[in-house]
Length: 243
Length: 307
Image 1 (tube, helix red, strand yellow):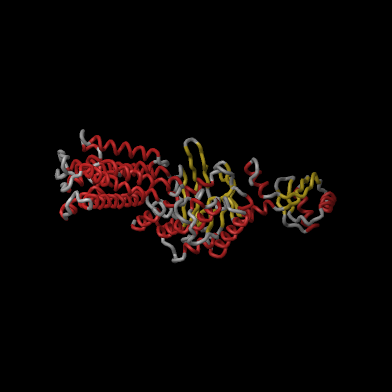
Image 2 (cartoon, chains in turn yellow, cyan):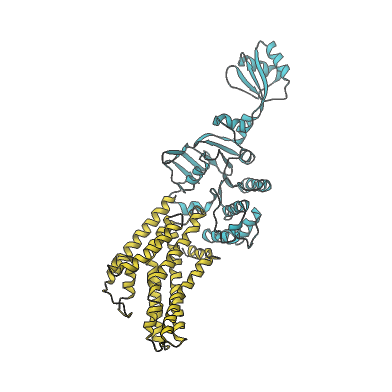
């Protein structure tokens, strides 16, 4: 399994888009910088700044969409260039294959959120909007890692769809619908969709200002678990059928 | 009992309502090169995919190294090297990087396995050209390098010389022959190019429309297709008696009560005719024939020839 994960990273050589997508981690910190610069505020509450830079659209839209696209990229080449036959006769099992892709998405997601955290600190502390203090930075890092980890699980259904399709159009379109659906459904019933359930888990302490939710952590985990189990089954069945 | 590396029993594959392979029973002996010959779409790739477990058989059974593949993939696959259809690799990686991925996944017998495999197929080691920019021939060579890199006992090669230039084809043929003769590897190779199979294979399976029409050793097939004198006579038994007594001939085959084939083509046909007539045998016709493998293929497939 470890060898398989290592080879997954070897495959990402010269994949410019994969690395360029990491730049999306800078979008919201930059936007927060422009926003606070516009109002010329200093001495801003760090959590208020981070709410803009890391806990807002990065959590809801940008990270899920980037991860969905990454899932599609990871799956596309092997199907497009008929490589799966070569992998199956190594042999690589279908589930090992899915897990190795999942692990790459997991590492990428955590790195993405760490970049967001670092950018948030730089864009808030260097211009002087926020006073440097370890407490708020550790809080930001903790939340960013949480987001990175849980979003990977929330995006697993997209990995399953990418595994079941030969092309990339449907998985990318599904990523868009899936992401925005998660964003909109949160106000109706957050326990129906993994992304909205993920937000419930992230905001479980009601410590992010402006966002107060009724919290049911087990239900949120159950929602993600059900979606993920179904996704794994779908991925496994579709890879088997491809035989 | 023969030591079969691959043995299929009544292997059948139906896609939708269409039968791609129909009751194919194939026997690949250890250390020999088995050529699967058939036109495009005859079912060669499907047979190989079933043997490799890449597609399930609708009915029938098969063994690889004497065992069922199912449930023993981790034991059996490392003993097999294969190319099925076009070789697939990561287009953003170089040939060396692609092979390094498979070397890491499989494990290789020695550290320089990637370099050695590339040397064998004549591709550069640590080249900067990515697979996406390779020509068809280079892609095919890389596929072969990947198949042989882990020193497998059995090679299953689906049209491996597709896209290679004539020199490349000759080099590859020599290499595959050496693998079999010097290192005892078993090779199952498919092709729609008859001359390729004729030059390479020890045993041959002829497949047409999913049906394995003939399975034979190349030697037997050559005997069937060598030059001969075809004699149509009134009485073959009497003709044989005359031929054995006068010409001391033993190398002949009798096809029916009026037809026989005499394989010593150095004999004078007019002398044969005269002797047979003098011996009381009416000669209806006599002709020097030379069946090629292609003629044979045409005959048994009941249709057009093959390249």
